[in-house]
Amino acid sequence: LAASGAARAAASPPTSPRAAPKVGALRLRKCAPPSRRRPAPRASGDDTAPAAAVTEPPSPASDDDAPGSSPTFGSFSVPAVKRLQTRTLAVMFFTYLSIYFVRKPLSVVKAPMQDALGLSTGAIAGIDSAFLGLYAVGQLVLPSLGDRLGAKKMLVAGYVLSATAVALFALASDPALLLIAWGVNGVAQSLAYPLHVKVLSPWFAPTQRGTAMGVWATSQQVGGVLSTALAAFTLGVFGWRFAIGAPAALTLVAALLLTRITVDPPWCKLEAKVVDDVDVDGGNSVDGGNSVSSDSSARSVVVGDCDWRPPVGMREVLRIPKLAALMASYFFVKIVRYCLIFWLPFYLARECGMGVAAAGYMSCLFDLGGVLGGVATGVVGDKHFPGKRTVLGAYMCFALTIAVLLYQSASQMSLFVNGAVMALIGMLVAGPDALLGSSSIADTCEAAGYGAEVLGTASGLVNGAGSVGAVLQGALTAWIASTYGWGALFGTLAAMSALAVLTLLASVPETSKVSARTAAAA
Image 1 (tube, rainbow, N blue to C red):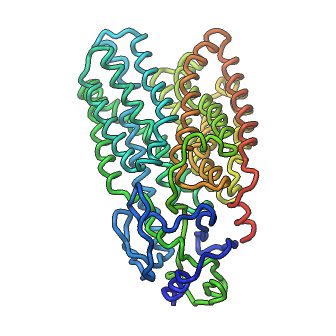
Image 2 (image 1 turned 60 degrees about the vertical axis):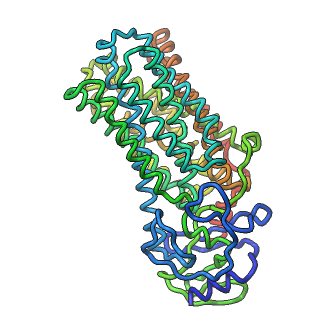
Image 3 (image 1 turned 135 degrees about the horizontal axis):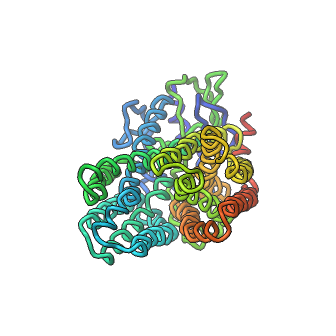
């Protein structure tokens, strides 16, 4: 019966959008507006072009369909959809985690590398600046190629280039070669975050996206901790060259996994034929007055946005309403986050009297708070702020403003108070960071009538603006702390958090199709 209902839906023209109630843990999601809809959605696994129009009726698909396979057209049950979503999220979590293994080890091996090669402190700083500067420029420019040439192709190319650059860095001794290799590594890595966002977003409905992206964003903290621990261990056993070069092999493994992913969810083939409304209480699917019995294991579930549309130029993407406010918000949030990441161990050692090792372990509480903040923000945003997650981000940045102002005093009280406030700050800054870099971008694009065709470019622009803040914080932090003291620095970070509150509120979409649909369903 479910298959016959899907067939009748395929034969009837698309109807006007209507609110769709819940199907289990998922919500049915409409295709693009008719004015932007293409004749046929892109085929699963095709990264560059639309597929031929599908005319044959759908047939049930097996629950065993996996992202790397080519499932038949047909209904995808709720358990099958969840399983495919989980597999894809797990793969993308690992692939982004792996990028930290060609990023973080340098911070561990700087001292022995400097001693072995006789490098000046200025040369070390230049290597860092080459990476951060080219990373920021790359995020502003390169992710748009993912919209035009294909996200999978660009991700694989970026990962292979990054691993190659790090291997050359590990073999080099000349300061100029070291700078060039690490700069190339920065350019190659600039593709990773925005194109992961582009690939992941269509797999999840708007009411699931915050949670999914929040979980995925914790790969940053997990990758940072694991890569640092591995670099520290291999440094002591094999030396600095092996410690920085060997982890590149994991990035090559990730590149191989990326070649196997399916960019578009297989059920996206059903978007032009999905039943508009599902009467959950009565167990009936309704389409154009035709009532069809269905059960929870055979309902058609459509999530994400995978209609193929031609790529959009950067000028048009920059004109998307509220996108500039998102860019400004991420600029301020990244200044605060990266200042604390890079300078907390130094502050704890110099101002709180801790040993270097103890300060390093203590600063891990900031990352642990960040894991909790990323996941919690996603869950709360999906439940209470659908389509308007930046409002939640503004609340968190307001609380962050107060916490940062109080931290200097709290750090002088006791280890427990110091650690608790540090973890709280980590949670409050990681939440806005996670939603600004992923789910809020998709919300903003959807509210303006766009979909996956702009996600690579839009994510690159927003993350690029954040990376500019990360680059500038280094000089800003050192100048303020040395000239005016740590109290002035924490006051500056509080001011940046307050500015983020204003820009986050300014970035809320004026009309949210997501929130309107959710309210109607409720």
